[in-house]
Image (cartoon, rainbow, N blue to C red; front, side):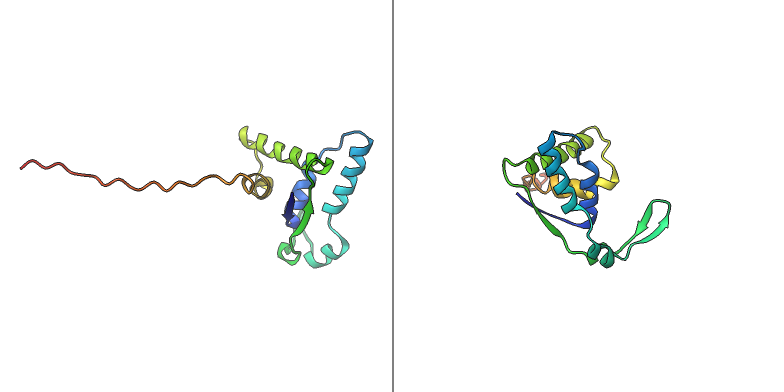
Length: 130
């Protein structure tokens, strides 16, 4: 599975990744974290400016979407599914945070294409007495 993520999606994804596992999982996790993290070139393009405290302003559109591959059956896919499960669980419990809404739409809603059914509007027939 390939997923294209914006800078904001990447930061949100990083926030949901686990920090636990065996040696192999942690090595793969570290590699994935490095891929998701911003590069020096990203920082220059974003023109990050602090606003107050931990809040920052930046030009998200300056950095194009980046594609990540999560091969079927790989540890990376397991990590992706774990993030998706966290997002689904938060949504079910009605505790999904606004910071994760866009990532939820990309990872969960984007993959669950609901069937749209067009239901014709019924005409109301009035019965008049003659």
